[in-house]
Amino acid sequence: MGKSKGILMRILGGVLLLIALFYFVIGPIMRSQTKKYSPEQTITFNQGNLHVDVFYCSPAKKGREIFGSLVPYGEVWRTGANEATTFEADEDIRINGQTLPAGKYSLWTIPNEDKWTIIFNSKMYGWGVKFLNAKASRNPNYDVLVTEVPISKSITAMEQFTINFSENGPNSLVMILAWDDVVVPVKMSH
Image (cartoon, rainbow, N blue to C red):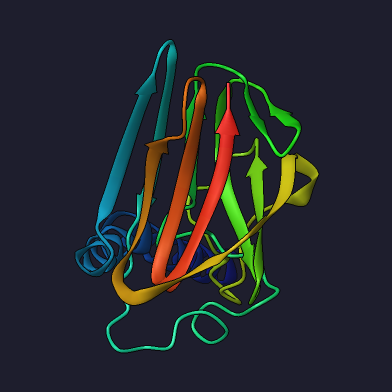
């Protein structure tokens, strides 16, 4: 009994060592390497009393076909690379007649050829995809606002995925998601 207990303890110790090695050494190295190719971006927009922050990682096209291939149509996308994109506003915002309460959300999208579904989810996710199957890690039970937005096509291809804001009049703004030849204008008001 004592010999098998010793073997079991060595196996358990080896497993714990491997887990610690991945968590403290391999995981951070993998994250730093992926961010070289998809750098972190923080976008801040202020209009009157409204303050909005968006955090995302910006992947590059690198000659690849993006929408319908790298980013499949009809599937949830983390809206960038690496960690899930976050959207934070300190005031309520109206999008397509729906109210997004002030707060911090993860931002997800479902790209399609003519329109995108925009999803604000109240749960924060450490990484944007599941490690086993590379599918989006979003849990739809935490969706706060889901809406559809028609896309526009650009005459030039954008190399880096970007999220920007522009003013659209008093108390009105547009969040613009753009990559390759696709531009997604999400109109908002507050």
